[in-house]
Amino acid sequence: MPISRTRHRIVAFVGILASAFWLASCMFLPNRPLDVPLSMSVRDGSPVYMWCYAPATIVGVLIAYIPDESGQTIFVVDGDGELPMPGPEEFSADDIDSSWVATRETWTREDSEIDEIGLTVEYLLDDDSPRGNFMARFDVSAGGGISGWPEGQWQWPTGEMSTDPCGMPSANR
Image (cartoon, rainbow, N blue to C red; front, top):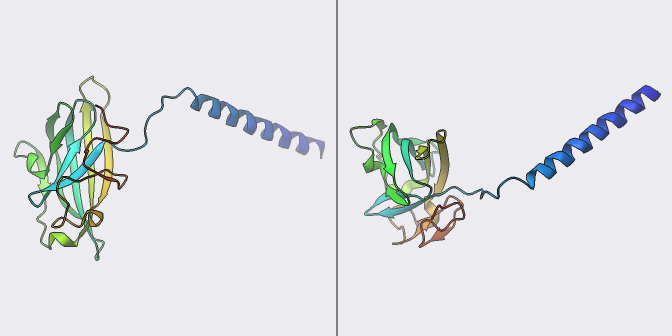
């Protein structure tokens, strides 16, 4: 019995020590916001997105419409190419031109039936950092749907609506 009790004490001590080191190390990490520096709006009946991060080149985009009733995902654009983003900059599916290797699907339902839009952006920062990505989902129904989207309103991935497309904490201004 004494060996078993000693093992339990050692395991407990190691667990407490590991937790203490983990908590202490968190104090020295930079305070990085947990939101995603992308936003979405609708202009002339089409979704537009705002890049709110550091200067970069977008090298991959996946845009998916998610209908409200069927739950089936419709990929609108899935492509690889180069789209320079010198700073806060708008882009849309129309910016994925013939120089991109892209797959496009045609949306055949009424735009008002779209419940969410999923957006994945792969990018290369201009400072030669490794390739990164951001993923966001936008609740289109919260903005009144594509056809009823309030003019000048942007939605952040957190769901918050704003007239400032890059007002989220993670935006690079």
